[in-house]
Length: 504
Image (cartoon, rainbow, N blue to C red):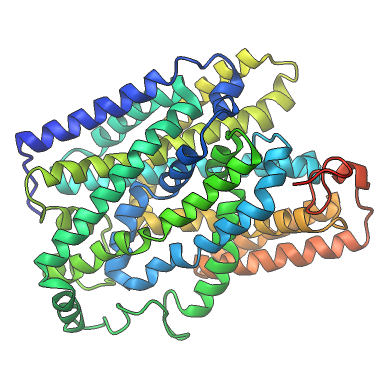
């Protein structure tokens, strides 16, 4: 593919954006003096900033690159990641889980699991989440490197290291407050950039009718413009989308993803935590098509260059760079800024939450039980650097091992999201689930996910069946073991507030 030569105005727009975001993040690092400031923004974050941060913590470089690739390969069905896997689960999280999470003054999801079950569940999930974070950072680095390599001809490692240095600077220094404030700006830029890609691309294809006509003229595209696929479809059939995505991966992501919920933990009240989630759900109504349509544009206009929609030897990361080349000078700079917004918002979200999780759930309990707040802040900054280095090291195996960065992301999640959701639902909605039921659900759920992957099931079916296995095993063991007392469960179970007569 011919590499793009940026005009001076495009370069200027990108540089100005990078300087502005980095400067904004560093400016908001001035008040960071304790671990609480670094990890939760001092619990002083406004709900509107948190709501937009939730959006871009979810939607970033991996989604812009990955959903363009998979929109090219599979079509509109990919929009279900927001329509089915996001909007309803976000509202469930907002009105059932978030009030209890916030009132419990949590730092992490494993911390909740430890209080509700025991330290075994807390520690093992903290380790699993930390390992996932390394993989997640690698996925984001690959998204950035694929875009820059295919669009600008940059070297893979140069792209990865430059991205890590830029984001690491203000994340390590500024913590969650810097992340959330810069995410607010990134959200606006991301919406504008994604909209411009769709508008210019659809116009180039001859309008929506021209786009549809070009796609229908291609072989093996009869389901590309259908949101719901038949049951016999090889990938993303409606049963696996409904069960694996709608019932497991979506709810687990919005209820139990540390990178997501940590933002709401930093709000000023439980009401603002709820409001931030509701705002996120409203904004997410516009994103599904904005991220998938570029894939359809690429299929309509560049199928001869990229190849059939689902080739045996698919090379990911090429669709979005080709579509972006349709943009005129000036607009291109805005869109590249939007992509960088996605890269940075995803990276800063995950690296900050990874640091929070391992400080709270591993470092303090096992190594420094009497650590001061300032010591936690220093150690947290060190872990930001460590996670970035780990993500950089893991980026090349991810680049070579998966056809799509979105495939990699969802595959990593499916190893433990089924077990996590089962424990969160049983823990929050029932008083009878015991600590040993929680241990059994976690071990059986994660173990079954590993076995199912070895048998070659799609990640959506892995998520569903590992959830069922975790649910059944947790209930079975709970029936023959003793639950915690009601006093122990206060403030941790729905309908059982921290104090008698209290309201949530």
